[in-house]
Image (cartoon, rainbow, N blue to C red):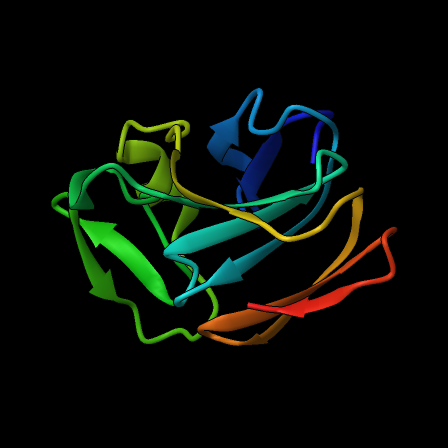
Length: 134
């Protein structure tokens, strides 16, 4: 997280693939992926949880783990957890701006912990002493 926003980098190439400035009204305290990294969940000192995704299928990150781009189409590369950074660079996208798909309120103060439980659920812990399962 970077202040009130967040960035996600493609580790092998170091390329910035997702960036959201001003994602929250206060500093972002935690971030996790959901739904095979098609959704991003952020928590913040503003006591809000936000779910982020792409505006459309064409706005998805150029390469997800285990995939590469070939002729601008996602295909499995057979190398689990790796992607071809040259193809990523040729995709012509340095980053995608995610869209806020929803806000979740339940805490009355800063959210300090965000834990992924499985691909579809997570828990938050706040300064208010609450643990909420979402």
